[in-house]
Image (cartoon, rainbow, N blue to C red):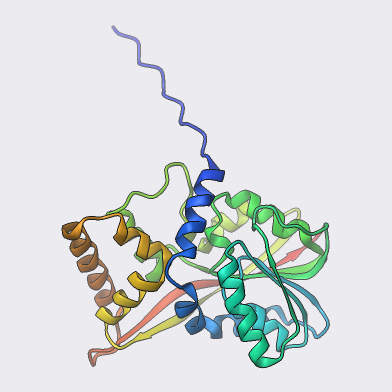
Length: 279
């Protein structure tokens, strides 16, 4: 009888290299084209948090500033951060157009350049969920939030439209080995792992954001042109495989579409999360 071969130990994930590639992906295209359509999510998150005027708020992985602007409209003192300077500039332009006093700062969600307990509230809409080292990003948000303060998140769920979009792309372009899928941030069980119940009380509610486009084909065209992860997925494939990915994305949109008139009206489930730091 032969002995079983020893198990091969998986190589450790090089988060630094992965983050460099990820940053390049988010710097490609122009996320702001999609980001501005999601503004309502930032507004409703601020209401869920019951933000008070004068509160110090940190937006992590802010993109072009949806929840940043929503908090500033409520007269909070907002610091908006992202590791893509071009996206912060888009947020800065939006803030200037409304005359909102906001501090913009380049920062990594996994190494926030702020002292412990600096903020009354820490927020992120469809942003921090894409940090490759999920545990570290969660720990950083908790660290910079003061005791008794709140963390507010909007995260796509694995079962919803965008969660399924990433699953569909993963069948065509393999995701990074050893890295947990971003939509797990929209799973309540995963949230309990990321935020220790001894340190934080986690509350959540399921919500839908509705994508409205001229047609499913219009949605695919916008996302493959402007949304970094989709743009990069198509760029990694030859023409034939691009056609197969496009076909699968159109089929997915058709599965979720409830317009009934040729346009695209697709609800995408996300978790609206309010976390209170206990100690």
